[in-house]
Each structure stands twice: as structure tokens, then as C-alpha cells.
Image 1 (cartoon, rainbow, N blue to C red):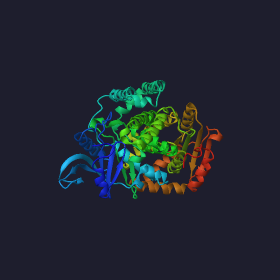
Image 2: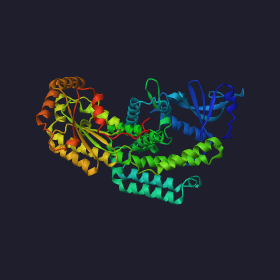
Image 3: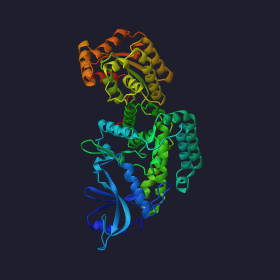
Image 4: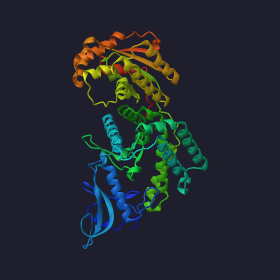
Length: 525
């Protein structure tokens, strides 16, 4: 079979099928069906050189992708040539190749197309984060036996990347550049080896997608998410730090000119997965992933078998990705600031905090979520009245705020702005959190949220109804915080702001925008 012109292509085209030629595979499609036939190539990490090996790759692809796209991936099927001289995906005839059978997805549903058409919404990004988190939480069929095993694999992967600098790579990088990249990566791993090992022990090394980017995500008109093209391999090969997936999409969003959405996605994932430890590592994993993608593009750019046009596209992509790979130490483009959203229970601080955080694409550190993490709770779990009382007990208070401080420090030290949502009812806590901002060298703004008592009572009643507990339980918790509330006396006037949350949210955000950094022009559209 010729890689440039498979013998079956004219037949399928004559029968009304569409044949799409990509660097690694052909896609044969008609109406709602799609068949992916691998090209007979032998790459460094993917051997499709024989029909039997292509069958194995198809089987691996179906098995790997069904958890993330169960309505897309069907089965591995043979491509046959029958006695009537017809090629078909059926039951009769000689098997000449193998294909992965899928349900064809409309191109307009692809996330990169939705982004180009300004149809990629905040809700879409939240749903994508949710699907990824649920996938990362799936039970494992393997076990990282010790904390150092992931670090050893990470180091081995890097050495393989560097040492595989064959002629195609040398067309893009000088020996000095290659040495500099290796030195930067080695230095980061050495400096952060404790954090990397700790993540493995905390269960952050999981089953991953491995190539998580916009053109592998489909969003239908009802908002349902399908994630395709997970990297192939045996089960024990499809694991890594989950930061690999998160940083892969954040990098892709930046490549598409939307740094604000990249940061927003990171904040959603960190908040909903309680994984603020990813912030110091995002740049490193973006660099690692960019280098891997660049390496593959460089290899394809040197393969005449894929065609001149695709060689040129691969060459351009390789150049851009290598540049991204050398950007490990870059910082987010929005100036960092620490914003504290303070107030009594049900004062509206959380609503304002999330709106402000979205406005500046900042991680939002919620004391409620820190409390849930310490108690080992998922957000959907319900608590009894006695459990609610314990959750807001004085003995848990210090632990909650220690965790709030820890998460805030991680975000600030990564160069990002951060919004912190908590009561901060004592002047000592306010002094301490301001000290963290000073320690990290960032501006500080303490926003005190107020609203009329009747509004607070109504909000407490609604919260109790949603939680399925007695209204008086929430009222007692609220009154307890109110009794201990201290008037703000320790902050400079320029760092303290009072807002009335009973007014329209848009008015409150408009006031706050006058005190907050904004995205550079042209980076959010």
C-alpha cells in the first residue's frame, strides 16, 4: 500500500465517501459514520508498520477513548476486499487493513471552531473541567508503589526527549539551545522534586488523556462534551501527573490568543478539584508538552510520504511549539494582586468573589472549599445539622484558614492574581493575610461586603433549604460569626473598601474594576 495513495481511496470516493488525509491516518466518512485507518508508519512511540500492529493500535484507541467519549467510539472493524471487487467495512472478503469505527462529529462542534466563532462559553469551560476531573477520579488499575517512581519516570521521559534529538530536531534547535532546555528542565525537577513526589503520594498521578487540546474536544448543541484522541498505549503507560492534561489545554488556549480563557480554565480546575498545588508546576508541564508536540511535528515535517502541504504545516507548527517549550518561566500577563472578599455569612461575598475572579481570570480561594477538603467532602455531599455545626466549629477554624493561606501563597508565588473568599472577622487574620501579600510583593485590597439584615436572613433560609438542614442551624452559625466580628482597624484606607451587596452585582463589579488590574488590550477577544 502506498502511503500517498491507498488502493481503496478511489473506490470509496466513487461511492460518495469523503476521504481525509492527515499525517498519521486517513479518515473515511459518510453521513454519521467515520472510520480511521492508520498509515503504515513506524514512529518512535507508535508502530503501525503492519496490518496486525494497526489492528492492535485501533483496539487500544477504542479502549482508551470510550471512557471520555462513549457515544463516539464504537469498535475495531476490518477493511475488506470482496469477490465483487469492492472495498467495504463488512463481513465478507479478504482483510486488507483495520479501522477504528466512530460516530462522525460535526466540525462546528469542535472546541477550536467554537472558539473561532466566539461560541466557546464560560459554561463550556466549566463542563470541560468537570468531565476532566471526573475522568481523573476514575479508579486506577495500577498503583504508583512509591513516591519516587513518578519522578524517575518524569526524568526518564525528559532524557528520552533530549537524547532523541535526531536530524529533524537539529533542524530547529542548536546544540546550545538543546543544552539550555535540558538544563532548565533538570533544574526545575531538582528544585521541585519534593512537590512532584508529594503529588504522586496524594493521588495526583492518575490516568490521563495525554494530548488534551481544543481540537480534541467536541461540544454539541445541548452542551454535551465528548473528548477524543486520547494517546494510545497499554493501560500502565497512560498515566502521568494530571497537570499534564490541565496545562495542555491552557497552552492550547494561549496558542489561540486567549490567555484569559487559559487562566480561567486553570482556576476552574484548581477550585473544583481542590488542586491548587498545580499552579507552581503549570509552566513546566506546558513546556514539556510543547516540546513533545514540537518533536512530533518536526519528525512529520521531514517525512515526504505525508505530502508537501502537510510537511509545511508541520514545519510551521514545530517552529511555534519549540518557542513555547522555551517559555517555562513565563508569568501570566495580568499583574498579580491579592483581593480579599470579606464579610459575614450570607453577606454576598462569594458571589462577588467569583465575579471578580472571572473578571481578572484569577484563582479564587474559598474558605468553604478549604473546609470541605479538610473534612474529606465532595461538594454534592449533604451533612446533618450536627455535622454542619462541627464544620463551623472554633477548633476547625484555624485549620481552615491555614489551608486558605497555603492555597493563596501557591497562586501568588506562581505570579497570578488571587481572590480569597472568607469571613476574616478578626483584625489578626486581616493582618496575617495582608502580611502574605507583602511577603509575595503584590498589592493588597480588602473588600468588606455588607447588606441589610433581612436580606441575610432570606439568603440563610435559601441555603438551609438547599442543604436540607434546619434554617436555625444556619442562623446560629451566622450569629456566631457576627458576635465575633471585629471592626476593621488595622488596614490603610487605600487597601480597604466597603460594598453593599444588596445592590446589582454589575454596579459592585464596576466599582471594583477601578481598583483592579485589567487584561492588556487584544488578549481577550
